[in-house]
Image 1 (cartoon, rainbow, N blue to C red):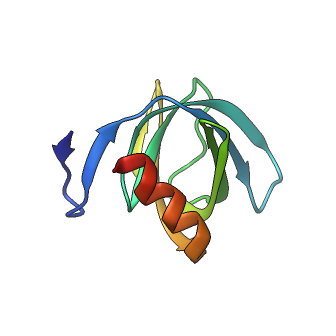
Image 2 (image 1 turned 120 degrees about the vertical axis):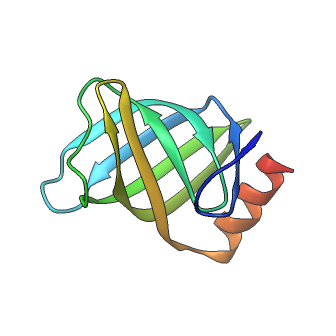
Length: 100
C-alpha cells in the first residue's frame, strides 16, 4: 500500500476490470494494477483520453464493484488512471471489504 495525492491509500490489486466509455460506447476489458477508495489504475495498451467519462466494473473473489468515473491525467502507454465520481452504497461496501 502507498499513499496517493488524493489522500486515499492505494493498494496493489489485480482484478478483472471492464471499462466502458459512456460517450462513445467503447469498451476495454483488462486488469487493475491498483485500487483505492477514490479510484484505480487499469492496465491497457489502448487507454481512453483524459477526461473521458466511464463506467467501471471490477470483478474479484466472486463479487462485482461498479462505479462511474473519469479518466485522470494519469494516462500512459501501459494504462489509465480512473477517479471514481459516483459509487452506490453497496458498491462502496464491496470496495471497503476488498481494501480491508
